Amino acid sequence: MGTNNITFTAANHVLSVLRSGRIQLKGIFQVGSNYTFLVEVNLQGESLEAVYKPTKGEKPLWDFPSGTLAKREVAAYLISEALGWGLVPPTVLRKNGPYGLGSVQLFVDFAPDGHYFNFTNTEREICRSVAAFDYVINNADRKGGHIVRSNRGHIQLIDHGVCFHYEEKLRTVLWDFAGEKLSENMCSDITDLATSINSFGKLRNKLSKLLSTAEINALSERATGLVASGCLPQPGLDYNYPWPML
Image 1: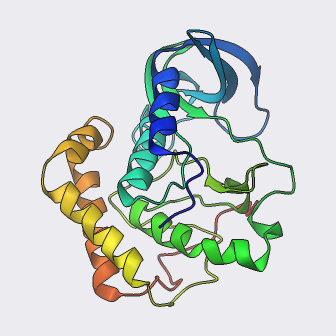
Image 2: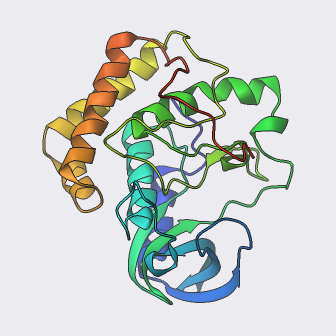
């Protein structure tokens, strides 16, 4: 299942360019509390626009370890791909960015009004998987503006720097589906994800370079618990809305 707009072969090619291409700064995004740059990544005559978030530009948070937000961006992409849902644009970690270590994510071009609060009913239906995804990764800041419709018409998710905490921190605008039953396909995908993490194979090895052991174990437990409940979570004392919501 999923909304992936990039084939496996194309995604691997994009990742190769993002990992190895020469990065050139093009501008800075004026929104957000952390430094975020628009860059151009060039490799063997091919050029891609991307979003570069250097660790040096991260504003310290009281509840997340310093210098880890860029790694969480990459972890969110890995989980999206492991689920097979294709929700997060290709994202890599680069040590040699213009300002050092940071995440580099394929730029998603979307209109200013192309966000969740302006979606059609059909587009909102797709977001059931987003609600499940955000619970699994424990997204502490899912704003409506982080769920976008690309100019090609695909739903994509951006901004995952404050995810994967081992304590419950879900803050999201996606309570439309609260309490709804998960589909069999979603349960199967999430079960496979938990199995993959617990097998201590390739995915676990990649995550171990991005997240702490406690965070990885909590990720697995959330995935297993969500399938066991069979339903998307209800808001409560431990679940809040982000602010601002857009």
